[in-house]
Image 1 (cartoon, one colour):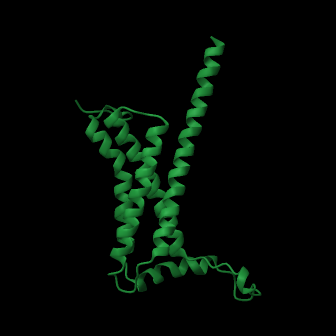
Image 2 (cartoon, rainbow, N blue to C red):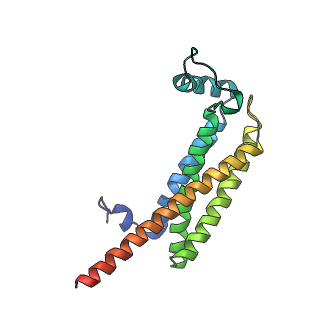
Image 3 (cartoon, one colour):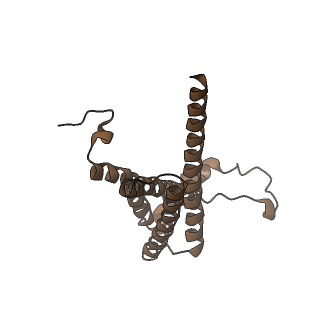
Length: 180
């Protein structure tokens, strides 16, 4: 029987459904790997128009050095990529662990969050190692730390969202039971 949309994902067999939850993480890993494979001169050529678009005009008075803010687009890319990767890992792990154990709740969320952070850090380390072989690029411990913090932010935002939805559902159930 062919599943119909919407709800086709829910009617698929368990293993297929679980792998669909991993798809965003896999796509982000491929994207991060592809961007890390770009030689240094190509990265600069891609990021230069962005830098020019947000840089102040040359006629402005420069700020004193301690207060000068420079935006490094490669760091912004790290933050965006690893917020996404951390939250994608977190979602996939929650679904995977829930399907395997049938558990839910706080313990599952903490376990999935911890594993998601660990996977994000391991991927960041492997990505920096890979980058060390790309011409014009180098590996940086600072980038791994930035990636870990960004992944943690993504995991925490996703977890807070789950908590908020749980609180909303709990209050909706409580008010429904009071009405009846």
